[in-house]
Length: 300
Ligand code: PRP
Ligand code: ZN
Image 1 (cartoon, rainbow, N blue to C red):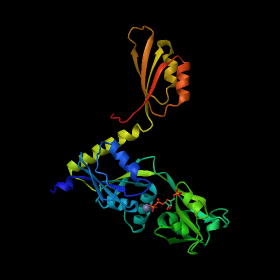
Image 2: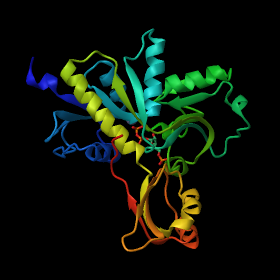
Image 3: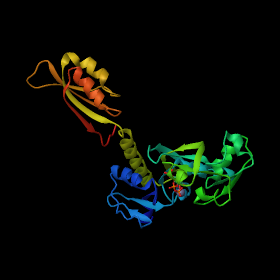
Image 4: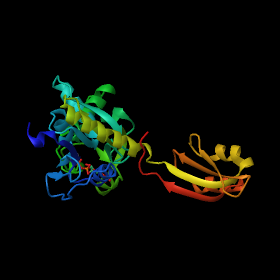
């Protein structure tokens, strides 16, 4: 078998809201890549893993067709592709394995500022410009609205001004694009964030082992995303109260302090952010020398 066939390929958005976060996430999994956003492929320097930098809309297809083993892409793109394939009578050969909590946006219907909108019934018999014909058609069907989706591959927001549509259905993140085009959001169809998808195609044992390894590392990085490691000193008598104050922590490590009979050191992984208020409460309960550290990786 060719050497290159044993390398894992991960599809990542070439330029857009997911690009930097996606590469950063993979770097936190230990991957070093030659970074050149002008290239189609970023070669992994320390692992047999390469990144394919492509249009986000192409990512589910590349993973489904087994050109890539994994992909990082918006849920909006995944769901649109799934509906498209369903309509063609086929199933995508990919599954979603992680939600990444970045790239948050929503697919919404927006109306020109001067157009009345009282509810889904206002969409009756209108034209709606969108790149998401599948998701829009699905929404209209579920709400029993007869409206006409008009396919636009880009610049959807100018469709009403061009007289090509009455409403639009597009992604909204900060809302700036809508504002700049005199549009207002009237209905949310889908809340989206970046997700990881994995091909369902059978892989060779070596490739499968490598995919499993990167998935385990992703899991380790994602699990500790909001975790903190907290260390403090306290009188032994305050232990119960201090344990109760530690946010989302499992059994902490309790150590004796050298040269002190009644003082202990408490170390704990907190599965959520540790705020100043928590530290102040811990201090009020008798804790001192408080330290909060970020957690980078975890392997259970
Ligand atoms: C979306 C959408 C808008 C913009 C909205 O495009 O089509 O142009 O983002 O964001 P805002 O509310 O922050 O102004 P995106 O950048 O995702 O590009 P793509 O759909 O072509 O991939
Ligand atoms: Zn896109």
